Length: 228
Image 1 (cartoon, rainbow, N blue to C red):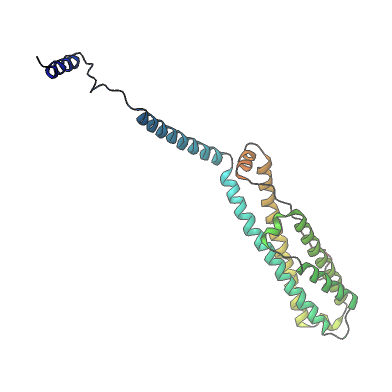
Image 2: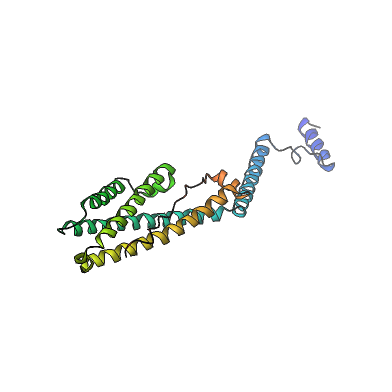
């Protein structure tokens, strides 16, 4: 019997006993590495799904909604203050055209207005506590100065009968009312948002996603004795 025939017979005998080397060879280390890599990927994907579900349960959607409301309401508030600046400018121009007006109080309004206008009223202003405080103080000074100027102007019979003056007064009252309403809405959203940032378990979501407390806004309400 040749050597080749003897080798074939030996392989056949091993096959009958289930030990043939060709059928039962072990997988290579490369195949094992690929399989482990796929398993790790699947586990990571499952982990990310669980994390997202956990974040959703801990207030992720609320933070998204509150952030959107803060952005929208904050922009509306800044726009209302810009509208008031335009009305105050109309008031100053109207009174300047009069022969008899209170120069010191007129100048006080003009200075307060210019100081407020010098502050760059961009949406990011509402996220900076120091800038926001400075802006609120400037707007409060405008409110106070305008109130005093209107009180003096009301004593002028000619102005009281002037349709343009009456219209400017109405515009000021309207814009101040919108400022108050919008401010109260904004303050409410800030309070809800900050409470979520501070309270467990939503504070975990805030920490992970980088949500931080927002500075509070003080509602600027004109004096009830202000002429309308």
